[in-house]
Figure 1 (cartoon, rainbow, N blue to C red):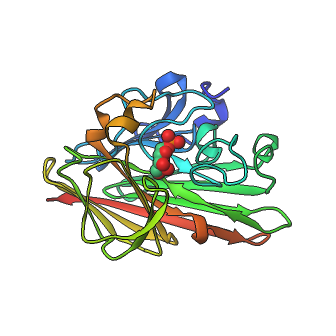
Figure 2 (cartoon, rainbow, N blue to C red):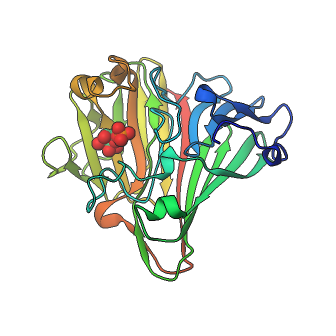
Length: 301
Ligand code: TA6
C-alpha cells in the first residue's frame, strides 16, 4: 500500500535530517531538513515537490489542487516522464507521459553529501509496466538537495533486446508573474510548436510567455535561464546527456481544462523540462545504461 511506512524503509532515515513521513493523501515522502536546504520527494513517482535552499523562497511550483493518489500524477514539482513523452505514439489509451509518475517507487538509499542530502529511488519493469511497454528496465532517480538541486535519471536495459525510450524531468518552476518572466538560452534553436500543429520554427531571442506555450526545442544542451523580475531571481538549469528542452505554460484556457490546477495558477509557474524525445529518443542495447542530469541553481536578479 502506498501510504504505510514500511519498517525496512526506516533504516534509510537520518534522524533530524532525512525522515520518511506521511505527506498529502497519506502518501510517503522523504522530508529533508538541513541548515543548507529544505526539500521533499515522494515515493509516488520519485517526485520532488519542494526545494528551498537556505535564504531563498520555494523554487518549485506545486498546485494547490494537485491530487496525491495512486494512479494519478502530482501537478507541480518535478514529474518524471518515462518511457514516452506526451501521448504514446502507437496507443492512444496509454497514460500521458508514461507510467512511472503514477506509481510507487522503492527507496534505494539516503546519504548526506556535504551540506546536502542525496536520495535515490528506483522502479523496475513488472506485469503492470509490460501491459504498456514490453521492455525490461530499471530506472533510478538520484536527487541531491543542497544549495543546488541535482536530478539524475539513470535508465538501464535489463533485458536481452534493444529498447528505445523518451524521458523528461518535467520541472515546474515558481515565478512571480509568468508574463514578466523570460527564458534565455534557446535563441536560434529549432522547435516544434505543439500549439500550432507541431509546426517547425526557430526561436528568436528570449522566450516571453504571451499565450499558451508548448514547445519542444531539439538539439540543445543548455544552460537555460529563467529570469524573474518580480521575485528578483534567476533560475539556471544546466543539463547533461539531454538534447531536448521543453518549455510549457498552459495559459488561461488550458489551465481551466485541468481539474488539478487552480484557475489562475498559470501565472505563477513555468515548465522548463530536461528531456530526450522524438528523434532524439534514447536507444539502449541489452545491459546498457543512460544517465540524464539536470542541475538547478538560483541566483539574484
Ligand atoms: O510538457 C508539456 C506537456 O507535454 C504539455 O503538452 C501538457 O500536456 C503538459 O505536458 C502537462 O501534461 P499532463 O499530462 O501532466 O497534464
